[in-house]
Image (cartoon, rainbow, N blue to C red):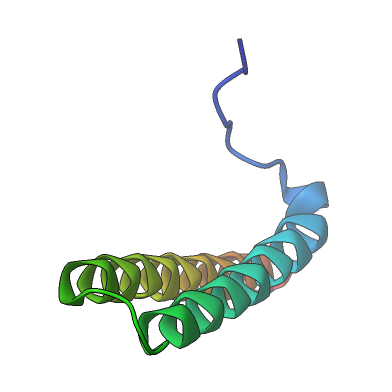
Length: 81
């Protein structure tokens, strides 16, 4: 069983920020992939809708990871002051 995520110590924030950005980029690529699949010819309307919904979910997750990286960067800046 996987362990639950924990709060990242201040010294690891740089790594956490980079990791969030990396995952966000990955989910954006997945979103683009599912968007392309949803517009393929010969698929049912229901399948296209499901694929678009998956794409929307991935882009939302990518946005949240970008936001988390920005928040971590801002927290890091405030700790330095």
